[in-house]
Each structure stands twice: as C-alpha cells, then as structure tokens.
Length: 392
Image (cartoon, rainbow, N blue to C red):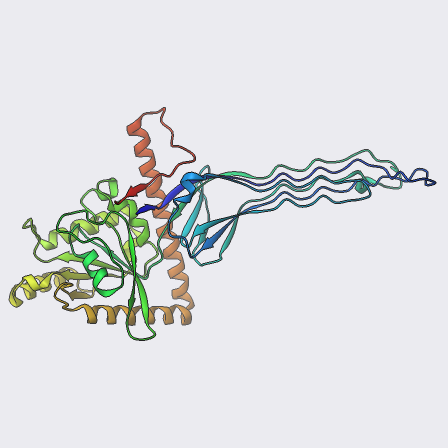
C-alpha cells in the first residue's frame, strides 16, 4: 500500500485568444467597415474534491496541469471559443497552498467542493470594438492575456471526528481495529503503523463517527524524529483527541512521564491543537490488578483534573462500549452547540484556522531544516512528492 499525503504541482491557466483584425468585404458593399471579433477567454485550472480518492499518489506521476487556450476571434464579428478548463480531482480534505507566497488558497473539505487555482487569461478584443464616429476603420486589436501560473503544495488531512495519538505500541491500532471495521497492521514491535488509517465506529443503528490512527509519536517528533510528526496534520481536523497511554510499558517506563512527553511534542507541533478536547485512555488495563490500576488512574486524575479518563483493554474488550458511547454523545452535543451558539461556532472555525496555520508553519520549518542539512544549493523537486511511505 502506498500512502502519499503531500505533493507539489504546477498549474497554468490557458491564454486568452487574440482579437481579430478584419474588414467586411462583400460584393456591392463598399467600405463595409471593421468586423474583427473578440477572442475567447482562456480555460481555468480547477481543483475538485473527489470522495473516491484517498491519496495524492497520482500527482507523483502527473505534476503539471494546464487549461486550454482560448481561440482567436474571426471576421464577420465571430467570437473565438473559450478554452476548456482543466478539472483536477483531489481527495476530500486537501489544503491548497501557494508555494511562492505560502498563502492558503483554500480547503476542500467536502465532496464536490471546487477551487479555482489559476484563472484563464482574458480575451483579446477585435478591431470592431474600436469603431467610433471619428475612427471608422480602426486597425487596433488587443492580444489575449496570459493565464495565471502557480506552483502549489497540496496537503492531505484525513477527515475524522476522533484522532488517536500516543507512543508506539500504546494500543492505538488494536483499539481502532476492535471498535471499527478498519484492519490496521498489529504486531509486538514499535512503529507497526507506517501510514494513517481510518475506521467508522458505529454506535447504534443510526449513529457513527470516524476515527483516525496515525503512527506513534516519540520524543523529538516535533523536530522530525520518528514517523508520527509527518502525519500529525491528520489530527488537525478532529473534534476529540484520544491520548492512549500504556499502563504497563514493556520498557518499565512511567506511564505519567510518557504521557507528558507526548503532550510536550503536541504542544511544540501546534499550541492551538492543544485546545482541542483531549481524553486520556489508559490502555491494556487487563495487565494490572484493580488496586494498581486505581492508583494510576488517581495520579492521572490529579494531574489532569478537567479531562475525561477511560480505562480500556482492546483485546480483553474492557471499557470499549462506554468509551465509544461517550464519544458519540459528546460529538452529537458538540454539533448541536455549534448549530445553536454562533459565538461557539465562530470560535471553532477560528481554532481550526489557527491549527492550520500551525501546521503550515511547522511544514515550513521542516523544509528549512532539510534545506540546511542538505546544503545551500539543494532544492526540492518541484514536481515530486515530498512524503512517501511504502508498506509492503
């Protein structure tokens, strides 16, 4: 399986058609006057969100897109045909960034959303348009304007209601595999998860939400260590973050210390992302006696008094139903509040934008760091994909 979540492409809109220089010439009609028509507008380049796509892999092999040029005008006041627009399909959840200005041009978060990323050149004007009472035979025309040219960075962010984070082997893949139909790779060694995965969690007949799993984070992830930071952007759209903490790590480390280390990485990556609701999920609780588990739970409750804390064992089927039920209820309440409370809805939108800004700033820092490590004469390949992971 190949998963690509970032790509650079070049788009060029079509050139407008030139205006025509022509005079009416018919038998028995002397001095027929100008009849040069206008050209056609150039075609745009338009991105279209397609729900059937889930990766940017196609852009590795086709990194350039161009709208058609408009046709030139003709005699007898004929207007040239407009150039056909180029419609480029991208996955739902794609953010579009201008590489030169670092401006976010748009966010295609729903199926069939469209975004014009390069406007076609305006049509040229034929000499018929310049006819006046003082200029009966104008020979003036204007050429069609060039279409816009842009270099774009596409960033894919998976659309999920709930996102999982934690150290490698914290039990994230096992959890999503148990509560949904997702089938992630599960093994007894770190970094089993190499690419993000999505699963639909059904709670009752008519209720469901989407859960996202990303590769585990390690200390130094925000500065590029490990795999997880490459995919942290996929958590930026989630409404709730589930921080899974192994209550009995194989290396004998302290669960509280591990939890604080991961949240420090999250804070470094995006301070705004820390404003999302974060639930603590103590995993693999079937390995501890009741008294020992209660001691750990009380430590976390004292450290994080305002957070929800759940104790689960995915393999032992402990605590999964209450967890998914509470998640569904909270998500439903949150949607209702956003619909009824305008101030809250505005805050939610502003928070999403601040998280997007943090993600963009982190991406720019990582590119600058790679540039410094490779040397001053190193340049990224304009037409290739920046992040590629292959899981055989």
